[in-house]
Image (cartoon, rainbow, N blue to C red; front, side, top):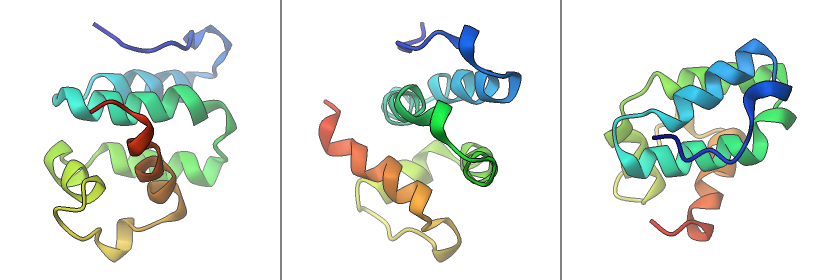
Length: 95
């Protein structure tokens, strides 16, 4: 079950794929974090940000979640403005 509130119809193929992958992670908390972020921001992401987001989606959910919750420090390579945007949305979510 997808939690998305965004229709993929208005998105190009790359953004539709990223939206789907954001909502189908493996850990429900990550579905909510990344899916919620994608619903809000996928349309506005630049090509460079889309590249960064694709890389992030290849990482393990447990790693990303531990960085977002502050349990582990974010590795320098992934401590980007995009990651900080995603992490900043967490307080607004009911996780």
